[in-house]
Length: 153
Image (spheres, rainbow, N blue to C red):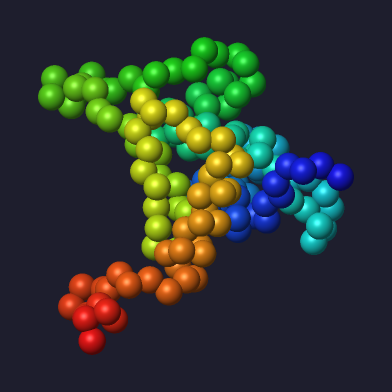
């Protein structure tokens, strides 16, 4: 048995910063491979997460799903960004910073600039587990706005 992490659809969606429905749609459209296994034993691996994040990054860059499909099938070079319509003014053509948003735990997101690159799936899994334990599931002394911190009482 492999030591690679296995992700349920919910875990993959959370690590990829998308919904379960989006994961299913991307599989249906051939943008990410079908899950491994059959029935209730199906799961996704690190390759699925990498592909999901690649598709999401390309889509957030303004590429259509058709263009993304072409890139993934090796038919086209990876586009930097989609071409803006000619009617836009020069200010709209200025380059913008692209960011990836990855949900690590409920209420905890990691925002990465496209210039930084993406941590490995193993590192993302480790970071998500740490967040679950230390920020969400564990006791913290962080208070909500308007609520006193437990250490102040």
